[in-house]
Length: 246
Image (cartoon, rainbow, N blue to C red; front, side):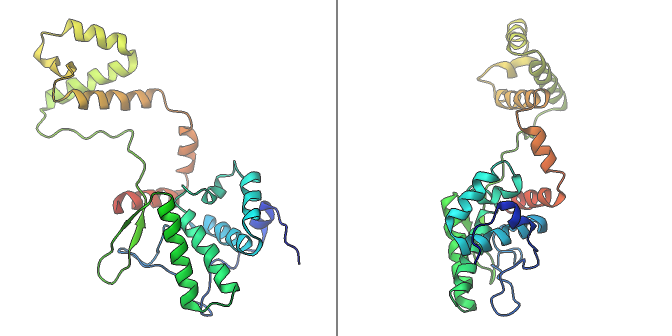
């Protein structure tokens, strides 16, 4: 029996078997407080790759996974192999389910193994576990990425103060610390610019705005690749749902 296959062959294989069937046609589902999707599930195109890869890894062992990691390390479609990826828990649950199914386990055993593997993967990556509501089971949630371009406006601030702070932050982001130092020195007795003082309640809001504007003017490395990922609307919706549930 042929054991060794390249990662490309895994992807090119017919991907008709897209879920683990535990009782002749019912796919494993782990319920949550929102809907029965269980752990965070990949979009259909990625899920097909995950399922087929998990099937080969369950059959051929961890060495096969290491070979894929080596040959596909720059392929974003295989990021689910990384423990920190949101889809890794789903991938690990599939491996466990395939192994138990191959060992002759019944539907309950297959589902139990899948849940156990998903929970272990979530705990290993630092994912939080929160209780569901009603009859739903516990769901694993991962903290969303920090919002780098959004700054909460403090309550009670006047329109004039907000405009002055925002405009000043834009100039500081554009012209740098030298401009900020000169402005602070020149306007030190002007109460309209008291927010430039570190002891002022609006100083944190001002610096957060300046940092956000700086990132817009000088995008961090890798941002263009992230924006390309956002062309996949399903991935964008997954992140929105992740933020909402968190």
